[in-house]
Image (cartoon, rainbow, N blue to C red; front, side, top):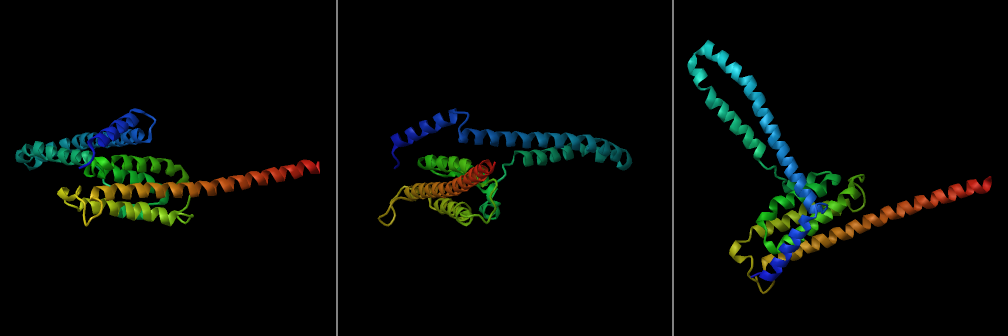
Length: 238
């Protein structure tokens, strides 16, 4: 069994972090709520538009085809409204296949969405590792914004986020719930393996991020040195 005291400490820490409006996790949850409300609003607007168009058409059809058609109008409207609102309330899912095909600049955000949709199916003890990865992805996004898919580290990052992370989550979810906290074959429990795997992914993301940052810093320093030498020569020539 997981240590209840450790889980309590991690839960308190999560609540504390989410209380900070500027924290990446809090921003991500606000963005998800905003997208959900926008989707619901679009659904309501579509339903109203359909109603304004369909009602006059049904009334005209009732006069032409008989009042039986007009009597079916409320049922038809309810069915249409139900379909529209079911679409509006449906949570779009990010599938692992989409992560493999995603543009590199969009991969961190889509991976974060994938983590959020899978979070409730994963153990409480793994939540802090999931939070760490989401925060890492949030800081990684600006670094990838202007990079092409062929830049250094792109292949490794795509494999890490598009294949290895989804496979880790998928593998854990296949384990029967009664076995997730039982040591298997003399080794750690599946829950511990999941936590260790998420921690490894977070550390590898940190290494990739540092490597990209070093390349950017080197390019910046080289450009600064170029400017310094160029204008120094211009001043000496004067």
